[in-house]
Image (cartoon, rainbow, N blue to C red; front, side, top):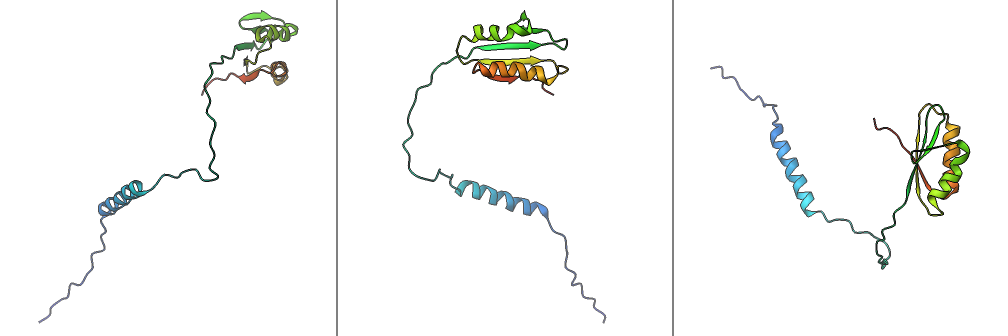
Length: 129
């Protein structure tokens, strides 16, 4: 009698049980982990109150044909510093530069330098993508 042996091992592997085990491990570690507390020397931090300091925002615009405006008021290039000085009045303010992309960088640097010299925070307006 010729009996054939069927000792083939099935090499199929079920991935669904593997994902179940991974999710169970993930849940286990999430539940048993402790949050990290800041290490170092114990320090008593001071408390403070919030203040409502409103910084004045001034916009400076330069068109591609080099026309200047400060808060929608058309000014000449020589009047920019005087106009910014009167608007900021010695207070620390915010100067937003709206400069056309075709304007050479030297004009941007010049106006930014004037605003920074008046101790204002300078930012450049851009278009989002």
